[in-house]
Amino acid sequence: MRTGPFSTVSQSTKTRLRGAEPRLKVHPLFAVALIVSAFTGQLLLLLSAVFAALEHELAHSVAARRMGYSLDKIVLMPYGAVISGDIRGISPLQEIWVCLAGPLANALTALGFAALWWLYPETYPYTDVAAYISISLFLVNLLPAFPLDGGRILRVLLRPVGERRSAIICRVVSFVTAAAILGCFIYTCCVAKPNFGALFFAVLLFAGGFGGGSYGRLMFAPKNFSRGIEEKRIVLSAEKTAGEAMRYLREDKYLVFVLFDGGEFLGELPEEELFSVLQEGGYGRKLKDCLSF
Image (cartoon, rainbow, N blue to C red; front, side, top):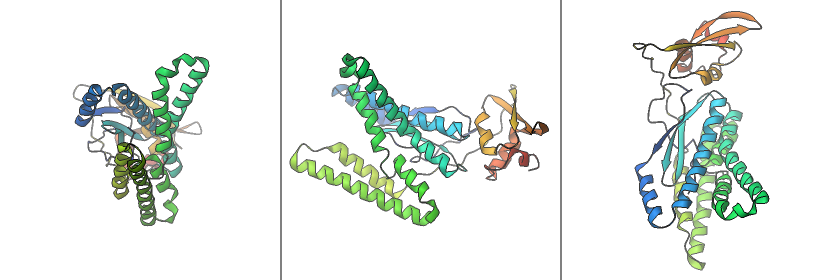
């Protein structure tokens, strides 16, 4: 079982605010996998994989939110977990860090288990499965193929050569990687017990090579004031960008940004004016420029 990266699923529901907390949904087939694992004695393995996958996706979400963007919908699937959201306007370096956050979280968890074994060796039989799953997620997700984090990073690094050319290169790399894994499956069929996990993984990478993932359009719905809503004022540097300001938004509060530049008060920016800027694609626009938008 592995976790899918944030780039594999388009957002099908309308996200109101970038500041929304991550939401968790369970795919119906995951419940089937849970029942099957319980009857086959694999329940502990499945649960360990689920926790590792959730840790991976939450790390993506936290990293994106710290940069002012939102990856807020996590879905548990039979093969792992996927996260979706809208991070348009994010810089290439920021996107790479968001991609790396998931694998690094798994790597740190594996190192934590190793430290635990060093201090308390008797815990090894109870934690070895969780540790191996974490290190596996770290290594697998760095492969340069969609729908893995490594595929997203490769796409970002290839942007200078052009969108169309980078897409072709990433697709070829994804297919080559999938073919190599499929070859491993065929080899195991000839010399040992077939590894159907490798077959499933190869199929997943072949499918990912045709897509690469997309982000849905972020929708900013007006808030309902009929029952009243608390106003929250945020004092912020006017040099911050509109994208960076999104991290402060909350569904249960109405925000007003009080802008200062070098200690000088410039004005107030209500959240609906910020939304107008963002809907025009002004994620990199400085807040002081949004006052006259």
